[in-house]
Length: 301
Ligand code: SF4
Image (tube, rainbow, N blue to C red; front, side):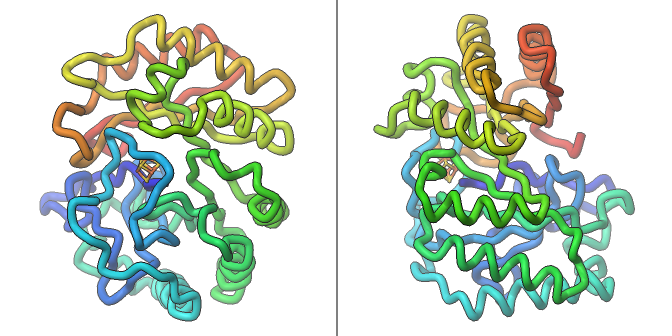
């Protein structure tokens, strides 16, 4: 599940970490990478459990570069843990914020907001996902960040697996968050934008089941496809799916956002701010019980 939306800072110099430039490697790191995140409104420490770039979706807006072969395919958990600890200790001592890529970031955003399982594919597809979750929770405590939030970004297709549910329970006990992708209201549009053979009904059911155990965040990316944004009927159907999830489930936030970096397909473009605002307003009107936040293509808020 791609971690989206790392926005540029507002300093006079353009920071190296920006909307347009967002490597999932950091220095010599392979698995752990700090990024400036629109949606975290600060620095988010990403963990990439899918360096092989394999995903069970093929989103038309995906910002993982699959035109080049992966530099590495397997996860070395020992190294991953070392990388995470080193970055957290850098943040603790302040050295992280002195790195060239963060030096010009405005003060309000120069703070580590979370650790996020994201990367170049679906984190729950990693066979040892639960063990890595355990390790990450222990490392952040050992590094002096017991309250730092751990977030799972996922397309929700695998969260009905027992081992993944166990990992999610561990995260629940540590005020973790689950940001679940819902990009459509109809099977047809879902197939157009997420390009997978997994039925849309399964995604909605998995989100609903997860939302019955704890409040979840919906991350909903809308875009122009060959110049066209989603239709009014699609947004109405999207709201119907949210209401399905709310029947017995809880949603703490809907993130309405758009493409921030180069998408997989050239016919995909970000939605202009006004269009994003119109969608957000319509979602608020149809689903008034859930807060909606918008995240624009080219800035932090
Ligand atoms: S779920 Fe979509 S956006 Fe996320 S990594 Fe897979 S193909 Fe890319």
